[in-house]
Length: 187
Image (cartoon, rainbow, N blue to C red):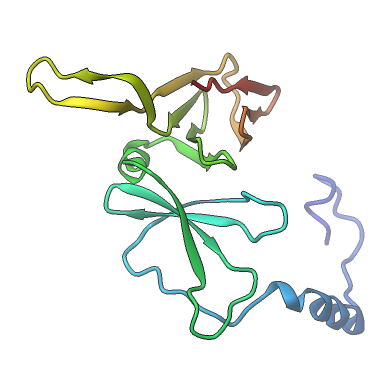
């Protein structure tokens, strides 16, 4: 049956020619691997395609942070299968506190990460930015040379969020009835 093509239409029958299936498997073989990577106790947070010609990068929780790892397209003997390319400070901790989280992703240039709830809200976490002059904590006297901004985006629609994509300058959030395009402020 084809229940996912047209809702409610149960006509037709799916048949697969074994020769066609074998040919498809052969053509897709270069996209698969027998290599297994042990994540240990590191929790998977999200996948993101940072470069159109590379496999998607993965964000794993390490302590409270989210570390971005880029798997290699070709794995050589005695080489690491992934390269660490970025860190989102405290992102693992923050994501764990979001009970209604549906999607997480980041910009291709790693300038911000976003957590999108099932309905209504998106939370944007920017990378730390260096300030012209350091800020001083009034109580401790400690000086801070950089700050990391956060934004909460309230969507007007109360529809379910169907997807989110982050680009370097804007973010797209698709709900059941509206496509939001949100410009992301940079310095």
